[in-house]
Amino acid sequence: MEKGRGHSQGEKEKEKTCKRCKRPYKPSSNSSSSCRFHPSFFVCRRHDDQKRYYELGPDDPPYAAKFFDCCGAEDPDAPGCTTTSHASYDDVDL
Ligand SMILES: [Zn+2]
Ligand SMILES: [Zn+2]
Image: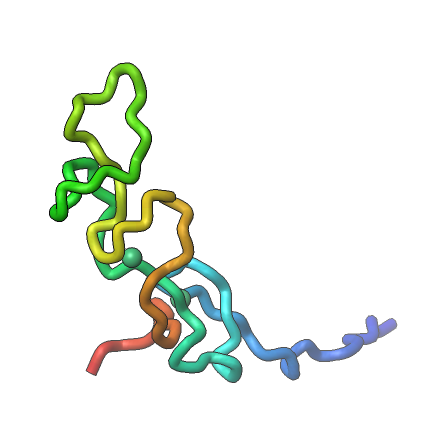
């Protein structure tokens, strides 16, 4: 007796994972504003303009500030300040 092979799943578009924001995305809906990320790192030092936005804790040195170097966002989970299209691990930079 032969087992039915049922429906094939080949129709569904495969999601890829973006190597920049680590989020899954569909190549067909990938546009130049799909991917939000910070081009620079989250750092802990004094703001260049001497301003301190970050509220100091009791153990922090007086000059401490934690923020993204690119845009000054103080929340490590802040949405990216730059948008571009997603890039998957499969994509090869030409
Ligand atoms: Zn992305
Ligand atoms: Zn940023």
